[in-house]
Length: 443
Image 1 (cartoon, rainbow, N blue to C red):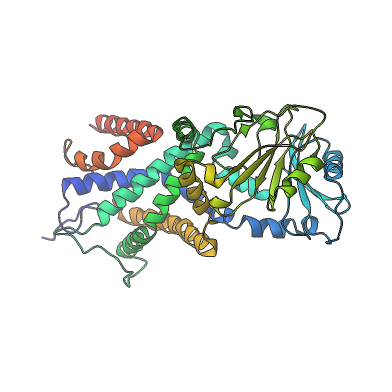
Image 2 (cartoon, one colour):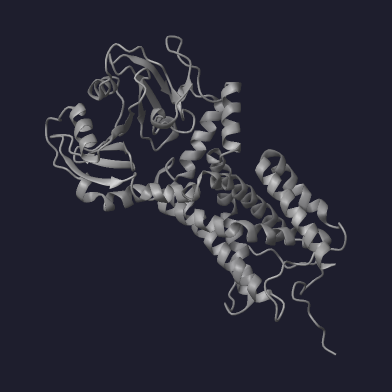
């Protein structure tokens, strides 16, 4: 009589710990892999933001370089007239043949207006901040609504669980196949081919996925805000305001500065008003202070607030924010990388690497490899599960060991993450509750 092989348990006997971890690796992939693949796709596109925008905006962004620039106040005036709104920020380019970009708030949303810096003429407008802003909001899930940004923390936490449980399953042990470290020839029609593809890909890009998940946490709605507050209160984040300036305030809406980075996000300073603020005066001060282009000038709606000039950087250590009194041109504060706390420096560095900028092209290619790897893992994992499903039935999870056996291995992996990332812990509790309820319903 031939031996009947169970769909989820062919080959050598599996330990209870291995089976339990395998089951949760399956659940983690089922829960977050579709969202993770969406974030990988949008993140991969965003790595090439400069190139994509250069192609999309070429007809509006390229101008003829000349000797003399028009007044920055004329840039602002013409941009506001063209879009029918109020200027929020101005991006001054680092190339003489590129247009100035003016973000304008209108009754129907934001528009970006391109202005020739030499004669002040408008060369074109686009809705919002262009297609890449749409990609960015989809990447952070903000496009689906602000509450969905909370999912970033949940997805990042479960991505870490995926990597940790995957490494546990891959690790060689007595009685099991030798862990796969190199691709082996196989037939794509058979499950072992996809199993090896999944294992090898996870082995080499798992570290990148782990890094992306951890460095993406500062953007999460819950953990990111709490961590930023801890950094501020401990002195490891934003530096204190200069003695001659007012204390830091939290700018919202039109008053929130642009391009200041994670550490200085929403940070604004008061400035004594002696008259109307002028963009041309602020830019003259920034250039006299040696602010390197490209840089963004944020124009506050509140006349008592200083203008913020932030350098558009690629390397974290090039960060600089200049606060200027728009009515006098006086520098209220000049903050640089050296003044950041240790925690802020670590996270600014992590964000720059996450965005593929800190170490040039090799950095970008490694992050792109991680994005591609997520898709390979999603496709290979899905194909493997589909091929291994019980005959005549849909996709089902690997069976759990009897009783609570093997749970220690899972809890050892997920409990530390649940403590560090509360939303991940909450989602884990929901998943455990759902598993228990499903078991009761089946019985």
